[in-house]
Length: 177
Image 1: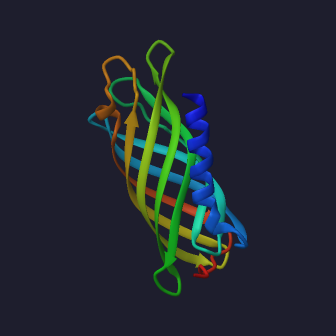
Image 2: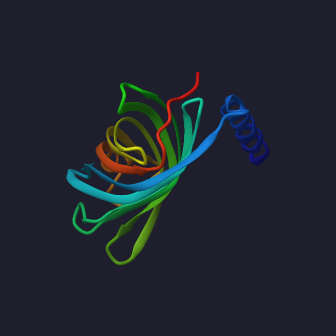
């Protein structure tokens, strides 16, 4: 099983990264805030993300966020992982992107217990270039929580729509197609 997962990850990496051969990379990063439904409450997530963008329009990086408020009584959710996506300019100072985040995290429950979860987070994002080095972003996505073993909260309770706001520090250059 581990051998198959390793071969699958290698093949995925080769397919994903092959368009990047010779592409010029540049970094970006910044804070993010997400607000969304979680266990019939509203969760406010704060965190950050950073990564590298390529001239081809492809980008990848890492991110982490956690709830700053409690939900369903006294629970909290935190997660971190990797994301990748494709972005395209939509005007002189605007762009849009489609991305997928994959990661792991945990639900902290009353009594200091913790339960692990797997997250998938597909999203659409719009960006507005406020300066040559700063882009303000807004987006919508779905937080799909899988493999939760949290007592009293199932995967569907922890999954939900999210609205996001963020800042991205780093140059914005049009992809070279």
